[in-house]
Each structure stands twice: as C-alpha cells, then as structure tokens.
Length: 59
Image 1 (cartoon, rainbow, N blue to C red):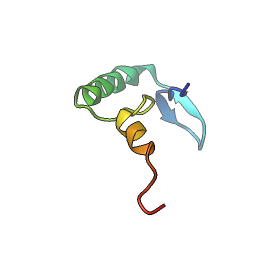
Image 2 (image 1 turned 90 degrees about the horizontal axis):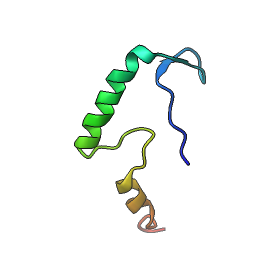
Image 3 (image 1 turned 45 degrees about the vertical axis):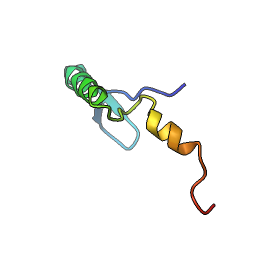
Image 4 (image 1 turned 30 degrees about the horizontal axis):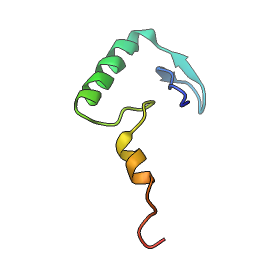
C-alpha cells in the first residue's frame, strides 16, 4: 500500500500543515491529470510499472 501524501503547506523538511482550503484545487488538478492520462502523485503509475518490469538495456 502506498501512502497518500497530505495536502498542505510544508513548514519544515518533513512537516506538513493541513490546508483544507487547498484541497479542492488539488482534487480538481488530479482529476484533470487523470483525464489527460498523466501520472498523479500518490496514485499508481501504470506506464512506470510496465517500464520497470524490464531490465535496463545493457545491464
């Protein structure tokens, strides 16, 4: 299971502050990217999964 990134503003190197007011913006962006067939952070990337199955040429 992959962790879902928190939506928020980063306050430190690893600390995130939730920003519910920004959630609709990121939800809409993720929906557009999904509709365009683009990779969305926090979601499986089928193209990468297929590419990663095979060894790199020459190795």
